[in-house]
Length: 515
Image (cartoon, rainbow, N blue to C red; front, side, top):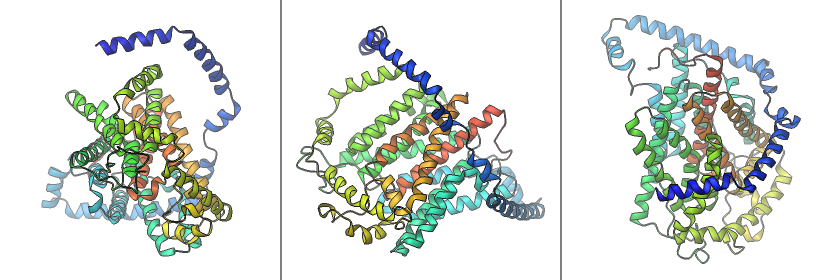
């Protein structure tokens, strides 16, 4: 009570201060210039490329092929249903399957996503993800053909996704290690299939909340595992921490993902979405314990000692507060400042190491970037192909001798995209990422349903937050963090569609939601 009174008084003093009045005047001036800017209007207007793409011969051919396939599936489904009518199997399905909470597509989808992130690293295989994503995609197509799901065409995913997929496939032709590039290409196929299935299937608030529930439990269970690791003890690794500069910093927890940076990246992306589920669950008695549980991933994030992800999460939180309630931003910063004395000494040591020119991890990245910039100059048009083996073949010719050993990648997603996929891959992904941001921000202006609104806020927070880590880490090097990004992108695309449906008064929900 005393602390809240102090914060309330400080907030009132801030609102009546001359500094606040001056900043509000400056903000109003910039706000007017921003809203009236021709450049801004050009950036936020409806896409002119998408209608052309939808009307193109390419899109029409794919649509015709898919429609034919769905008609065949539909005819087969009707024949099977007619033959099975009155049978024991049909009676069992009508009684136990239809309307079941557990036996339906959303449970399979959410359950797999949850398992994908809670299975410990030593027991995980990326083949599981490929098989599950392919199976979910095939099942969705079967359900769509049987009339139990709405058809979601290739062009519904957007032109940037198509160009990105083309760049990934074309990169095989320029790879000096084609077998490894083909292996890594399967990860991209998996990620895009997950993006398709999520954005296609989440067509109602109920389905959205169900998926967010699985995301919540994945985040909480992974965080609990990290807390367990802290109590059980984690060895300090010289490969993960500069021991001389970070004396006193304990071993960095890695949760279920095998690496502290990968685990931190996963938390940055999906914790905001988990928070929305906790806050918007219908059962009021569940909200308090579920919201309290959201503290666990933040504690786990601290224990990863991942400095870039600390900054990423801070950005995500600022964006979340900005869109949720701008008036709380000063209080948020006051709370952050007030929390600094409460942080452990090891966290302060880790933070201070960011300002040191002697930090080996920082200087190592700079040396790698110096070499990879030279690679970009020579390979920006075609790229060198996907995967670490292609990088290992070509990088030594350009490497700074101080970073020649132990550089499996460029330590930056943006640079890795143009190195591996060339200019088409880089431009198409940046187009895809920035369009998601833009469409999410626009959707927030028209969304009235609180669940969809806060989901959109969580999505743009996670996407923009991890975009900072993209600049200093190759987040996609570990496939499960790569999949996490496209899971979040799929949820974002689905929430944007839901906001459009709400505006137009249409229902996206299918009549039958069971398998």
